[in-house]
Image 1 (tube, helix red, strand yellow):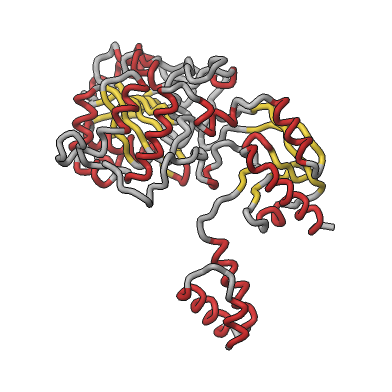
Image 2 (cartoon, one colour; image 1 turned 90 degrees about the vertical axis):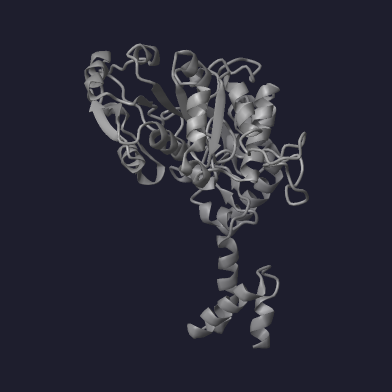
Length: 414
């Protein structure tokens, strides 16, 4: 038993979890496996990893990486629901949501825990027991199997489909006005594209029909002009809907995710007319869907960076706009493997089909398992008969760690 205890020492797990590992090993008739079981449990916990996949918003890796917090939140409390000027209880939406409204140039905003929650809350508040008109080409399925028709059914709204998968014209929406719809809903095809013989109605055209228009823009681009980027919008953003321009076109509300092109933590945002936002905030679901202080704090830092026009403080934009030449220089400096050109993608249900020229380091064969076993784990991809570590999704500060992991993986594979 003493040898079993010694084998478990140094795993870093608390005593109850070590006991579980020991009991499982003894029950399996293999006491010597206890340390391996404890190590496996330790590796199953949330931990930092190096994303060398080239997928900038990798859903399995938490989507948008966040910049450092200005102060560790465990050290002090925050004025989450306290008005410092009066000492009275305030609203957790009065801080970050107000900044988002300013950044999107609209009357008001509300933050919930993810993008699907934003759509659900809008539908439940504004369209329960009433019709909502949606193009058949926009009845999307988002990650995890959640589908717009199912979200709508859960909200209590009644779906009215119009048009076809590839062509939905303004008269299709106009004909559906006989259903007395509460809303006209446009949903951005965030994770796929319909190309070829296509047609769709613009937001401005739908606004002219009368009912409030709600647009789920999906990825959270705040402004198509990207004033936070010194060089203006990159070519690969062409055609991506943005919150500011959608609202300027007359949409009553927009909804979007916080952890995609916005580059913040997992959250959902609804923004637009103050009266509609306030109605959503009063709905009983709003409390169930609200985010906590850690999320709001991280999102606040992200939005402040936008207002400062400081793209460098938002890791997604820093990664996405790094020049290929700089990535090639880093690849050569790693000193392990073969520097190669490759392509990155946005990921996270954003900009489908997009490829951003990139550079990285390649090792012969499939070395992904060895890289995952490194501490910290490195997540790379296999392309053909090589393992490629794409540097566009790797923070430059992690290049030395990546080099050690690649060297160890190469040695482990002979």
